[in-house]
Image: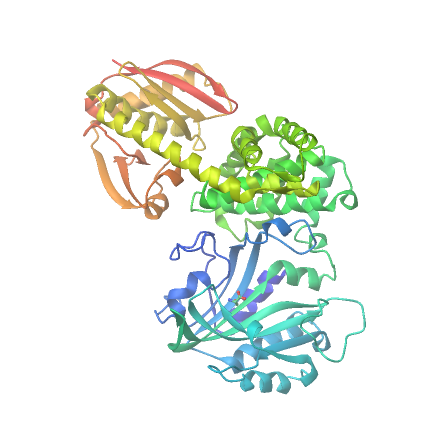
Length: 581
Ligand code: SER
């Protein structure tokens, strides 16, 4: 049995209810892009709201931390990880929590207690020394020499405000050296594996108050603990990663020892990209927020695949993603539900980046060769971004490999100016477009939604809109699709659209919060372009899309729909031209 199953079974046997992992994007905290800890989705309950599953909970939670993204490539850093957690919401407190953690480690995982050490809260002006935890550890047989007291490292809060409290951290001696008698938390042979936070306070506007209930929040990282249990010093050699690394080695024909850094980056980044793009939040690569992280991860993975001489045009990324999906789908249903979406996101982004990657690398070399000094200026960095699609962080990474630096601050200013200009331009265009919408254009607009829905039914649900253009004379619709449509497919799509037109279906417009709209299954092309409150147009139960409109009130107003041309638009994208008669 693996660590996750052992953990969940153990806490269920102690009266806990297993709760499902929340999506990677926090549902109630817009201040962070991703869930970074198991407790994040539970904040309202730690604050006092009753949880529908009761007062004892446990789970494994998908977490993403991107502050260390550039560190990935060494033996321990990951952008995605799973956190095991058990919680008491005003139920048990320090005594049970510490006892159960100790028993799980020593009796279920059979870790000798001599290999464990702990830290407890030393006390400050506001909160006293945590004597209860200290005494508990001693009573369980942890020698006083192996209990360190700290202030800074033994108070836990997610960010600046929220539920918080003193914690006790459990460390494991990850080395073959003799174990020192006295525990030093700064000695990095000791690695932290579990953190038990006793959440009894609330920090708000710098002030600390008492929460209505005393809670426990614990967190244990799956990757790290698995590596420890398997006795490996490189996380990527544990059972979590071994087969992924082997596959990358097989695809590239390069041994792990010969370029472990690039292999770890590919393994880590593709896994995180799989979890982001399969999440029900529906994130797609973009230039902002979560979408930008997804883009950076995929592009960095591609660049390292390039370094390993992998044929970028082969389906290497799909092979790796498929292995990851198969490993995890038992635990996360979204991976099976959205398997095709994941492959499509990876492939589309790869195709986009691959067009410019090689030229961009050449341009970079050229820049390096003609550089006066050792700083890549903002204009050059912006050119790499704008013309070759290099995220600034990628330029920084390339630069640091050559011991150069980049004027990132200047780049960001230039980037903002550029954004400002294009926003103004697109707003102007949008206004003009709306104002100029004729009756026939409105009909075409609704026909576009019907065509999108029909393509999904006939060609496959992984068809997504990639663009559209409407004039008084015709509509043009671009969509993701890997093949030329057959005559039969075209005929079926046309018939379906006309059937829906003949069915005289009402078109409804509702306003809702963007995340609710996405959760309800509404389609949208560029999620990051929409404000928090969006309009959603529904056509019966056939189509639901985020859209600015305008649309006809009933499909019967459209007229007869006819496809006049189907052709390739770009790699993986087809284009349909159609008219209304
Ligand atoms: N919230 C604590 C942590 O992330 C314990 O789960 O370490």
